[in-house]
Length: 335
Ligand code: IMP
Ligand code: MG
Picture 1: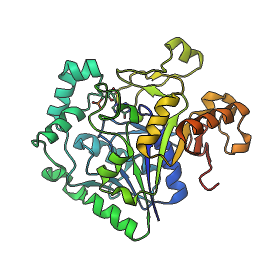
Picture 2: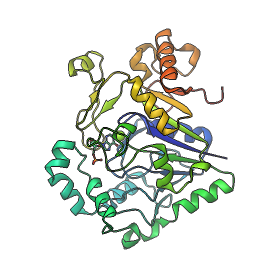
Picture 3: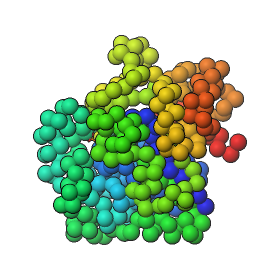
Picture 4: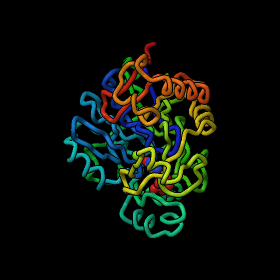
């Protein structure tokens, strides 16, 4: 039995989806439940030669044997939810906590129509900020107020805690990243909620004493979408020269790219209570690492980088992603 939280250590889009998919196939969780803000998150998951972008359904959907849950703290946009349910043919596998806050069209209008949110902050325009604001004002609707959602509703914390009582394995997926936490990020250039591991536990109603591991996912070259400070940001020319170009899953905006940020990694590891670090994009540190699945075959340059990550975070790097496919990974968790 174990309960593991997976969160993003930088500004989001660290490749959490790929890490969740790998762990799920290895560890056989019965439940995968997501926390995080809501449909502002986008996970791109590669399954065979097909690429899926999901915003509501946990990225763990690629592991077919787990039930999928959306935790209490997550905002649900019913339009996005039903679209993904159909696209993934996931009916019967996906459950929503009855107390999830609802994003209505008015929230999207307010998000896109606000110069402050849309321009100054560079929000995703998905309605999350205004919907969380309504929740705080205690005027927002909940999932249990939406008849079309009735058949998907459950008590997510009860399901998760009961599964842990039975000795099952549970994964709790975070979304976004540490640097855009409402509390710990670069305020006001942040999202509308905390994004740290404690918040992901709270979003799912699993108490801190039940968490066995917190895996913080860091990208070798961090990225940021939207506005706000990014101390290790490179010029577009520099990232183009490295052959790195990325576009957001939700907004399709080009992501800003930076070099490894040891200070942010250290702080992020501390507040997340990191027990293990995962690194994605090691093939960008050294192209010769592409697709490698054994630690011993990594190049000296890559190993040097990983040693730096361990020094910065104070945690062992146990998962090293060497390419986009789910099979392109080194897993050192048992070593
Ligand atoms: P909001 O969460 O849509 O209000 O956007 C606030 C800020 O957080 C913007 O800079 C967004 O680009 C950023 N953001 C929100 N969700 C994500 C995510 O899942 N990945 C990366 N950036 C995000
Ligand atoms: Mg994303």
